[in-house]
Image (cartoon, rainbow, N blue to C red; front, side):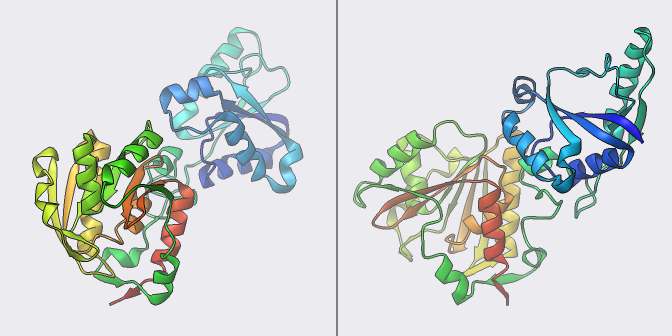
Length: 337
């Protein structure tokens, strides 16, 4: 057993891959020093990375009875103290970061210090065979265990909402921004001010909400409409400017149902936004009311979904892991037709 081993990384959204790396370190060392990338360095690469304190707390919280054997420290560069550490004799990494370990040993040799033993840990695979990574979690593709947010049953055929799920959906899923029903601009203006800067697409669901955002001068990145409001044809629907979107898609999704076609359109719209920031209008023959239940699971963390609450205003909800989890649980309550 080594007395002290070293691990370095960002450790954002602590996941199974991180756990495997630390587990390997603990199997070969009495103590581990884990050097976590500082906020100033990590957020230059991706602004969605959680603060250092959160990343450190999450890591330590997953250690259970091994917490006394691990300490966390702030890493300000690629090497930290590894090139000068007098007591460490091992370092742990993945194949993607092994070159950095070689550089560390080269610098240690130049300073007359013994090389660190390098241990490489294989990446952990997600459900689709790809790697579990913090970037995939932030982009909304997988959860921290590498599992999909959308149940597999939704990828084929039609899924019908049950009475139990309908009851759970009675309460607004998000923050209600109030405004008069005869002037939707009031709620939209307040909502857009409240939203501020967004680290993902702004997704609008519902004809009134989409048109109100258009008239406010803030076109959503992704919009879903069905030509109805309160389940009745809505004449102003024709004022929605399709030319304001890079892509226009159409699909079928009857009331109370989520179809494979709706899922495909929503996935495509998110993919398009992730790829080049292009916007999409999805026109649904049926109803778009249940679309947020698949949009949250699909969307990158930091996205915004906004929809109307008849007679009250608009509801805004940030896409986060908690909203994804709630939607996945609700989707599991649907029944296959």
